[in-house]
Image (cartoon, rainbow, N blue to C red; front, top):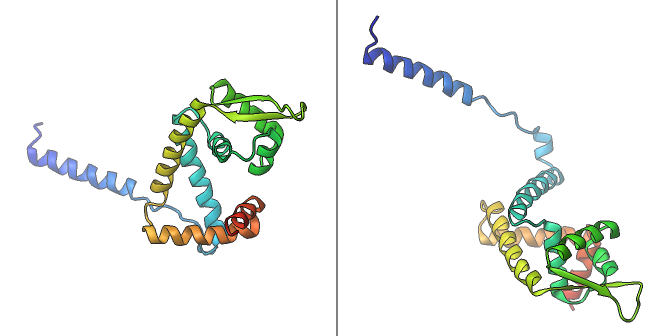
Length: 182
């Protein structure tokens, strides 16, 4: 039995239709009721943004929590472990573990507070400053990619609206926004 080019083309055509019908299975979407909820969308987008940013930071050997700590230290106003934990809303035990990781990487150093020996003062090292620049680049890239469907004007509008909601629900944002308006 010989196979002709015509038979081969017919076979490929059939396989293509079968493959196309398999790959075109409709995706089951979220119920309209849920998609009509801004809070539902914020939650799902938050989860997606967290997953995307975590992967990007992991590629650099760090975590978004590390970025937050280094960014806070860069402001230079909160140096004690307790003040850092409070400002970022981290559990003090969780913060100690994160600082251990940053210290092991040479990005921060901790020393006893000369005024109150019970407290530790945290300072960013030169290596920490370099890492912070890398983390800022990662954060910018993640934000750029995640918000790609929006124009610059839409991004500013979204940010302004999110800040307005954050003022109501995130006490740590309220403090920053209040200070910025002075």
